[in-house]
Image 1 (cartoon, one colour):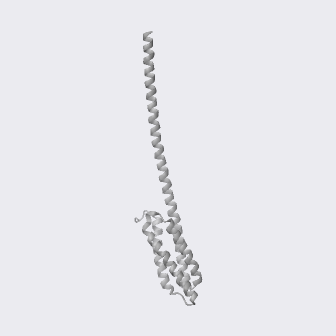
Image 2: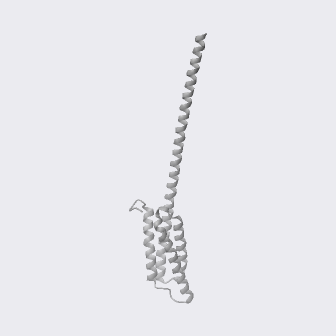
Image 3: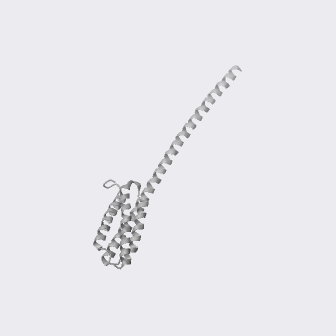
Length: 171
């Protein structure tokens, strides 16, 4: 019987050791799975951020296209001398520029100053035309106003190119 007890004891020791070994393997597997889950979560977060940035770029590009269209319409209105229509377009342009500034991606901050400077220029034009109309005088030469609008348009077209083709020509 002594051999029997010794055999059972050794069998118990082997079974316990195997149990501990399998528990270690299960724990190690769980740790690896946890690491993989964290990596998947990080990848999902990175993809979400990238998608948000791409959407922001696309929306900003659309807003810039709308601002460029407003600039072209304003230049035509200036040439035609339709100053009352210009007042409405100034307001739309100012609002659109503010929307562009608010949604502009952080990696294009060199253009923030450009947009920030354009809003007061549009406001100054609007105020001058409004004042001239109230006083019954003819507003300034359309060519001077259009030169300012052309400069704005050039900056916006550059920005739109950087938004549309971010890998071209650097930032």
